[in-house]
Each structure stands twice: as structure tokens, then as C-alpha cells.
Image (cartoon, rainbow over all chains, first blue to last red; front, side, top):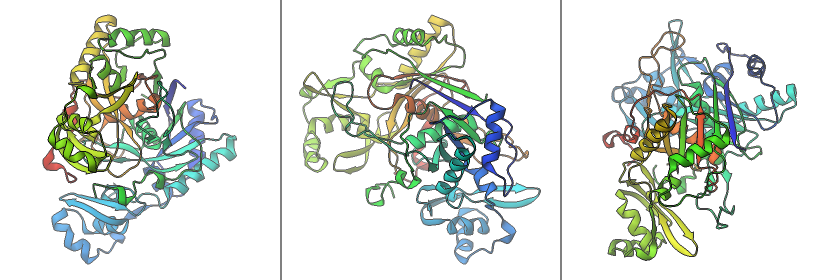
Length: 251
Length: 251
């Protein structure tokens, strides 16, 4: 496969709780003139999954914990927001004013537990990550298969910072229908020797590629269709992307 | 821009010291039927830049340092290879058997100073990263402009591991003609509010997207042409991607 095409599906509306993302994706594909085919990949910004699944929490509904109250002056954050961040986290790795780096309850390391702050119609609210992004990806994959017959992969992506580099990149937080890692150990290179770089983070590269078109700006281009992605099919789970703690040198 | 196309240039030969990468890229574009246009991006695997620039060092030519000899049993690596890794590094961050995580002399954090081991025709050798990848990218960009008149960006990519995630992803180690970070602070979102995610790691997302087609397997697809990438033009340098040490919580 020598060519890879990414298309931002046009005309995706603002998403509200209960919206049917399968139907919205199918409508976007139709507007783009794309007929879904086996092996295609759909990348969906976690933000619209969260909105469809009703993960927007008004801060007025949150009672801050004493721990959050104690951390608030140093972190320079709303103690209700800190309460939500801690509730979504398995462990706090690092803090500095404005920033909490956590191990999310889903297992990955990210800033502020992936929680977006928002203000819709004057009300301060926090948008939590989907409850189970692998399951959200599976639902969309199965919905698309039921509607079109196509065997596609779905990746849910979010913007992640990195330990040593500036700028965020798209990272996978949920997958369905693809193995997130491509294990090439044992594949021969051009000279017939075994390979050195052995395990590729395919789902994260897909997430980063799609993010280029999503642009991070808003919800105008949250769903990206990709054709020509070399990936290995399988049930897949985001857990395969997580480095086991005993192999982690930077925790 | 709603569509992004990546093409792996076909028929790129094995690269030897002194090869003219501008000519080789132009020949690959011609084979692919692509006429270069303003705003296109070429992504080139660091490995072929290194080879063209003669960065292959036979291990037989390396005299191990006492420090490398002392580390060799624990690291389970050839002390001559360790000698080269340390010579290419500004600091050692972590070690475990088989692995040294360093701050490369170029400023980024990576495993084994980005050095590939190779065995060509029975001779053990190490392939170092390019001396100055930004300069390598600039040379290719200028060569392409001289030949075609097109104002393109060039990104040199390599496979990097991540602190907390399994699998390697393509990362930028040299850029020319684009700002590696897209700073959206102050841009308004759909509701007219200021944005939360503010600085996008565009060059790294480009590097990761191209890596999907390069596949990490060998040198068969080292040059990727991209059209439709949203990026901001500018001289650019990999240094802009490096998190300042005083902001680094994981060193």
C-alpha cells in the first residue's frame, strides 16, 4: 500500500447528549461522497464521544473534596475541577501550578485526566473522557458494519502532551477492529536480517495523522475517514498500548 | 483543507554515502506521477539522510572508552556501541539492560542516541543520526525549490519510543520551511471562547502520519510526499519542539 488518504467529514453538527454517532458518521460519509470499504479507518475525536455519551458535568453540581480544596491554591485551579480530575485518576504523577499529570483510571498518563473545561451558555462545566472508549469504538464499528457491511477499524483520539516535547499530538484512547501495536519482531529487513525497530505504535500514528486535519481548534472536523492505512485486524484494546508499570522508567 | 494525501515514493534505491537525495526525491516524485506544488511536505526517514551523509561507523574503528567498558556488562551491549552512544549524548537519563535513554546532543530525548546497529556484508557498524538534521532538511528543501520552483516543507523523521506507551511513533528530528508548532493561543473556538488546547505539535504529527506508510520495516519506502497538510510556513527548527528543561517534570 503506497497511498493513504484522509478526509475530514464535512458538516458534522455540534453533538448533544444521546446523539447517534453512527448515523452522524454515515451522513458525513455521504456528504463527502465516500462509500465505506473493508479496511477503512474512522478516527473520532474523544470530545464528541463524550458529548454524545452525556459526560458533561456542570461544576455547580460538584462538591469539592477536602483534598481538592487543599490542592487548589497551589494548582491555581477550581477545587471542583480538581475533584473531578482526582475522581477520574488512578494516581497523580506530577503537579505544578495549572497542571496535574495523572495516570487516568483508563491506564494512560495524561494531563488533567483529559478533562476539558467548557462554558456553554454561561454555565461552567467539565467534559470528562468517555466511560469506556474501547466500548464506544466497538459500538461505532458495529453500527457502521450493520449499516454498510464494511469491516472497518475505529480509533478514538485525544490531544496528549509529551514528557520532553512541546505541543500536543493526537493519541489513541480507544480502538476497535485493529491491533493498536504492529509487532514486526522476526520480520526480515531488506538484507534478510531480523529487524531492530520491532513494535510500531500504529494506533497512535493513526491518531496523530487524523489530528492534523482535526486541527484541534473546535468541533468542526471531529471525524476523519482514512483509506490505505496498513494495519492488522483484531479486536484490539487501548490496554495494549500501555507500558507495563514495571517497565516504566519515568513514573 | 479537508483532504490529506500521503504517497510513498516508489523505487527509492538503497542509499550510499554521497548520494544526491534531491535527485533521488525528484526521480521518486516522477515515478509516482506527482508534480511538486507549493505547500507540499516531504518526509524523509533519518536513516537515509544518515547514509547519504556517511554517518555509518564500522565498530572495528571504535576504541571503547573506560566508561563504556564499565557499563557494558550491565547494559548487555557492545562497549564500542556504548562509546558511540555516549559521544552522541549530552546526558544519560535512564538505563536498564539493553537500553540507554539519553538527551541527544541535538536536544531531544531518545533511546540509544538514535543509533541503529547494522551489519552490512558481514561488518558490524553503527548508523548515527545526521550531524544537523535541520540543515539536512534545508538542503533538500532548497534543492527541490531550485529544481521545481515549489515552496515545500521538509521533515526528517525517526522512530521514537514514549515514556508511558508501548510501540514507537514517528517523530520529527529536523524541519525546514514550516513552524514545527502551531500556536493557536488566542484563536477562537466555535463558541467564540479562547481555546484550551493551544499549541499543536504539527511536525511530530506529520512525522507520525508518514511513518504509517514508511512502516518501519526497511528502506523500501523512506520518502513520503504529503499534500493538504495544514501548516504554517517559516524557517523552523527542531529546537522549537524541545521542552525547556526548567519545564520538564520527567527528567
